Length: 305
Image (cartoon, rainbow, N blue to C red; front, side, top):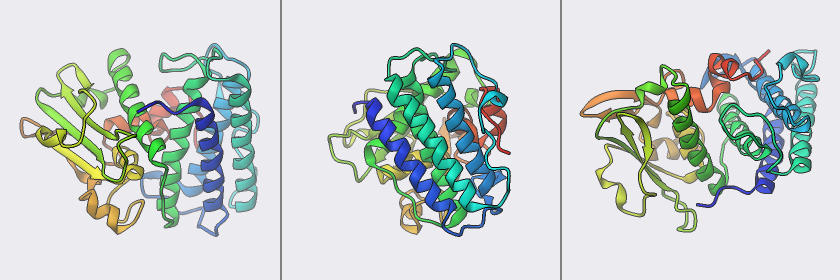
């Protein structure tokens, strides 16, 4: 599929911020533990997300050529009063406006530091689109709300996930990222509700050198893959990020379709190489670093407060 356009990413960030704010102000328990990020409460998750939006916004707005310390991010920690849903929601909304405004003004080609070898504002538009999309899934789980995302956004999230995993494996292998290797291993991802224009089907091979994307899969090509994840486009990124277990985003129907994807093993030569769990699947740690606080801090991102 065609990568999401810069303007489309900006629109999606604004939408996701609005939807996450709706969760915050819905009466949800802000002290509830986030099942997929058990070190965090819902409020900490939202503070992390808003801080990440502001951090990325500062990078883009100043055309930063190196990482900016988080203590230099204006109001990066959020509202001073804890447990105030209205204040937290307003701060989150402002965080989104700051980032989207900076991205729209910069355009996709403006030079901006990034940690992934793509030094432009377009990287941050795409990265923060998927950062907030997956964190809204976390928030929906914590609050017991339904969750869905547009098919083209979900498909691009998988593409970005693969791009970043391969980058990490090439440049700075994380202990967990090294686990995603194995001659003969493969994963078939297939969005069953996507039209042919999305081509939302992938065959990912786990080689001895790392993750490789086979020629983009077409209908019926996935029969040889050792592990298959079949489900609606909107939940495949959540499955890849370890979010779809029983009772996960989208409800019981999605859980049944994914057959408990939160505990699927990726097998090569009949032996487990990694697991799709919140604390365990390495790609989630390197791609969605916000749910792995250690990995996120190592990349220079803001901490939950």
